[in-house]
Length: 507
Image (tube, rainbow, N blue to C red):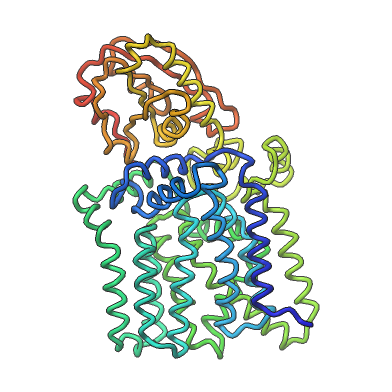
């Protein structure tokens, strides 16, 4: 008895969960996870570098499930499994049969960047799911479903905007795709406009927060482009897509794009092809990171599954339906350790040297000198960092500890103190990086400050009494976190509240 397509997709989703859970505890927290948990302790309608949803998710998970690695990463893993399943459903909506749905699901299941997205808590874990839900709603409307579904599209898009502002790019791309494919009738319906208003209403609290705080997200993006991100050419941007999605999957999404734009049976789906090209154009022209475009590839993988299914039928090549998925699965398993921490770190380093996949598609300057891919390097050293700082803190006289601040150089370092510190008897950290800057120096005078981490050499110049107390050593961490001095600073040249602007780092 033949297995139906839904069962196949459910099996692929389960396989994705098993793959994610196989590596969920091998390394430590990713830098950003520590930061998002800290943001969850300062709930607001916005933050310097992201909308509020991720902080709300962090708060909810910590209160409902706890703050272990597994608890924090359950929702990203589930989101990834849902994306695998729904990519196959999208292929079905495009007219694909069982093989098309299977091929689309396999292509997304083993895409290294999608595995990486779902390996830790971040906005990127949920963005592909939100884009995909909007795509499913849009295609059903185009196929003749009630235009009232635009209300659901607007609701999902509004949630997406509270997750990550790049949701706006996808919304614009869908509208642009409909216009470019001459789907004018869509815009005669009042429901699409009401859907847009729903999205705006859901986005409005964060939009007002941004306005009240001087649009810090724009400052973050500008500073990152100037000082943090690696500049890449349009050709490199496209090449990164191939690497992120796995080179063997390139025929799937390339076939999907060609089928959407030129297939005889695809006129009503053509807006998806134009939407993809619009997304790529926006991110290339705005010098965005190359992974920003990745959520749109579920559309092309679904279309590619249908295109290859049609090709194998018309050319009477049934062997293709066995050989190509097998090749994708084998190649995906080989690359999987670069998206999920499946291997002990020493084994992974030997594996990476034999298969230098980690040397492609680097997006930040700091990653160039890292031994590990940034995904993994930023998972090392945080607990040791907190323990070393705790040793310095507890070496102080008891009376001085009560008034001594712990000032870190970046949000990962501050987040490490905030997460591991309570068990070590440490107070919450202060810092000048992104949202930590807005949270301020609290009530600390600066009479005693433990200063460590990024830019600590500059910070110590603001004090007249500086003592090197320890060095934090983390050989597998990012280069700037491998050998970190810890200073005890006294005699500030002004009260800490006056000196505070000197610690600001928005990037």
